[in-house]
View 1 (cartoon, rainbow, N blue to C red):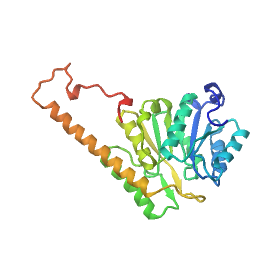
View 2 (view 1 turned 30 degrees about the vertical axis):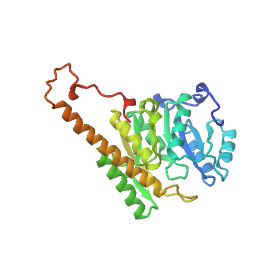
View 3 (view 1 turned 135 degrees about the vertical axis):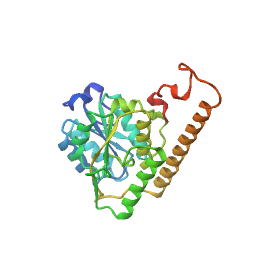
View 4 (view 1 turned 120 degrees about the vertical axis):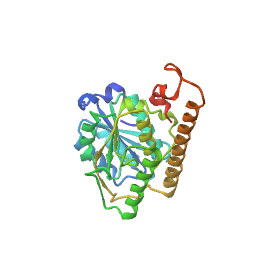
Length: 288
């Protein structure tokens, strides 16, 4: 089916993945004509009950047309045609909304270029039975990268380390994009005000999930550098990630200092007063 066709009932007609409902694998594309058929085929073989949504940003190389052909042959494959190239984050957000509107119980992020192995998807889905969000991790024991230059590995490891320290997050691979969400988790993350892209988009969602109190786990994956097509990594994506992570980190630290100052300004708070230590946990949608 293409461009928003289908209903929640239609989306759930396949076999259900355990108690979580049908999984939707969202694959954003821009000029991935060389890869799209292979990656969709591998997903369908690895988890036959899953559905696939190709979110294409009007690729000049005809990726969208190829995806339409796949959808015409397989009712588990769907295509969301977008007007133009707006970035990875915008494509995923559109895919999330599409899937949530149609009643999918699990939504998965996956790259189109083959760097994320569909054969490892069952491991992520199994882990999700005991979690709210599962991150496929290159940097936990058992995880690895294949065919990456040392410079790229240094940037990725360094970015995750900096984000972990700046934002005080207990995660080893914060920038990775192979993830499985429960629908309730996405619904609680406040997606309407997410503006970040690329690496930063992944950091933002992980940050929101942790701060909102969701149970996030990492499972090891093998990340394989693309063999066909061009990488979408750019200097602008790296600069945005550095700027936003730094801004978030500084903002959180300033907030903590101001909170301590307010708590110690000479007022004696009773058990029922609005002292900082007595505030109820914020609802997930309030963290931005």
